[in-house]
Image 1 (tube, chains in turn green, cyan):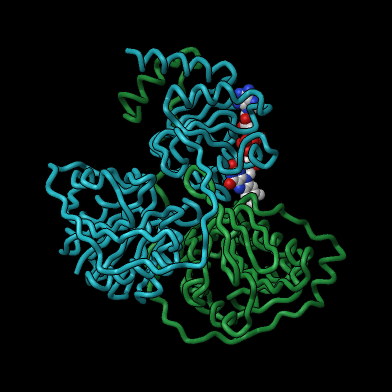
Image 2: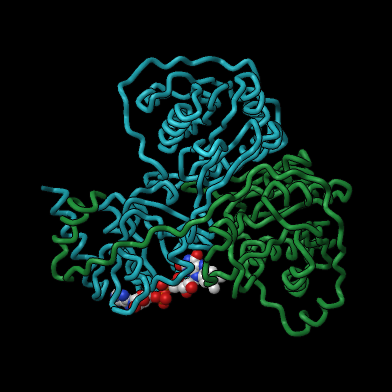
Length: 246
Length: 319
Ligand SMILES: Cc1cc2nc3c(=O)[nH]c(=O)nc-3n(C[C@H](O)[C@H](O)[C@H](O)COP(=O)(O)OP(=O)(O)OC[C@H]3O[C@@H](n4cnc5c(N)ncnc54)[C@H](O)[C@@H]3O)c2cc1C
């Protein structure tokens, strides 16, 4: 099996979210970066498990500049065999998807796995766009996946439950919680990962059609009203009369 | 030119999110000066209820039991072309996320997912906003293509109902081709509102001490008609099912009421829930960070407070 895992770089979860240039750009000052958790914890680990079972290789795909190589090295330390970096600024979901799909076109990956969404722009569409461009079925929010002789059983999260499907041939999917368990690389893996190959390819021309023009922070809460634990009738009254939510 | 909204159904009935979608489409149509048309796949018994959102026309695509999300998306793209759609609206739901990318791709449309506002064209450009950084910020996007596609976050706007008018249902001239995916089984928990759509949520964390103590949370949720949620560690250690995990790496929600018991309010938890309209925090630690994000706080032992709150609610419901 040849599996492509798409990995993204996101601010660390406790990073301070601030903006610059008249609130038109995310401020990277002091921000630490990590691999997007859904990519690292679920997409990559399930790909590794499938290849451990059936043989083959796991290739990482990342769209970003050379400074992002540390994110890719993390994936190689967790166990991916090699990586492809498309050397471009990941300006939008559709741009990223287009670059990865262009690369995948000639490679005949059995499976392409993304995280269900990134924790910065929360798009949840890269996998869908890749599937659309390659003309192969796409499954969102997959929480269980088995694969035998080219036939896949895919369980995906839907509102209030799950949907189980069967499909043969190449597929694209996005990984959700439940698909696998996070793996922590050992020192030896981290050393080995330094010798693994990151192939750098040039981006194809693509015009992005949706962009952020302004950021703002949510308006602050008015302050908490403390309520006496003995007086839950009062809380209920406030929820009804003041907050009007019950 | 028209706005097209994808109407979600379940067991031949419209889903709650479809009211929000229909209302959104009609209101967006007013801003963009064009009509709104619903699009539905397969039979639906109660489509005419959508007239209360101002919707007056629905195009129906006949279902094909051998179709899949790919071929359904292709049929929707055809209908969009036939109706010269300039804006397509899907729910930010499992079906919306499945259909939308392929539809947008086929129409060469620019797109933004998970939006929470009506479009604005005041600047001469089409702009919509959405929560980013898992709810820690809001971004305004501009889409520059002639055709635009968006997915709407649940509970983003409350439809104000209008006088019912007549609903015209038109059979689409397109059909759904056979696909390659077979759905084997759908397992659903009946009776509860799914978390992303819930207006009332009762959530609990590690302060519960163990899974055997969840009875008081479930009872509170039942009395309130709320859906249950939990913090990440609680789902990770298997006290609660994965789908209840809310936060930055779980489900992002925006209910009207979020009650959190025994949850400290770590930044990753807050990220997924701070768009809730009203937040009630029950925690015995006065320093718990969650109080800073709360509207109402009770600083006490949850094992004492939660049953009391349930009793007060029972009284309120009975009165
Ligand atoms: C990359 C990353 C992603 C993460 N994503 C998420 C996420 O999506 N969602 C999420 O929830 N977390 C997430 N976390 C974890 C997060 O940092 C916190 O560890 C977690 O939210 C804490 O869960 P908790 O509040 O249930 O437990 P704790 O932090 O242990 O808090 C328990 C609280 O219960 C209170 N308590 C105890 N007993 C009682 C009692 N009898 N009565 C009243 N109060 C009581 C305590 O005072 C305490 O405040 C993430 C962490 C990382 C590193």
